[in-house]
Image 1 (tube, protein in one colour):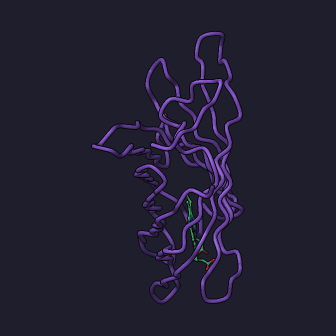
Image 2: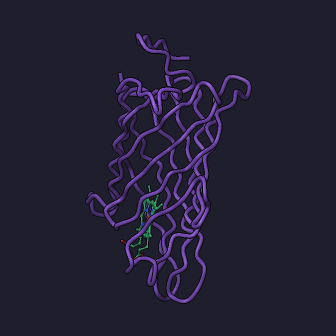
Image 3: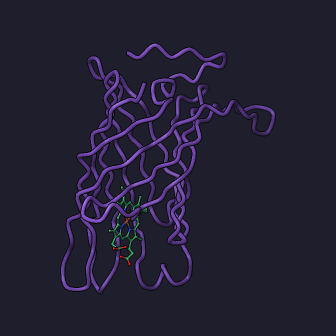
Length: 187
Ligand code: HEM
């Protein structure tokens, strides 16, 4: 694993800290008459931001992240995402909050586990889920409703692979919007 030293114990999140770059992005997105494939490249920066105490009893450690994604075809940013990854050590729960400028935000929950040399982070959220939910503007609720989200990161040393699935009700059907990439830690 990468040699990352912090004063606070970020537990399984420790290994995410840093700047990552990847050029093998594959996006499958909805179109009115079908779907589009968008090869992409991106950077993700995870920054350790400290701990917080909730209700004087729950301690969370948190990373802030920023993800900037560009289409290979025109080098333009077509996805801009930010949020936090949090670890509740007492209950061993991983939480991922994200916001995108389509007026959609969510809080996904799950766990991190070891798999051989890798750490696998798996979180999920669902519309109307009382614990891990999705909020979206009235327009998006009507026209491009996000009904579920799953995100799996598999981190092995300086390599980060992710796959996320965003279920959308759009253009009168249910669409599986997927994104995946392989990133390398920048030194
Ligand atoms: C690397 C990650 C992602 C990329 C590259 C991406 C890219 C895209 C693209 C190309 C579209 C088609 C519409 C357009 O051309 O603007 C789209 C639609 C959409 N995406 Fe994503 N997306 C990503 C992740 C997400 C996530 C995490 C969410 C929410 C949890 C999300 C929610 C949506 C929604 C609601 C739409 C429907 C809006 C529309 O097509 O009019 N996306 N995305």
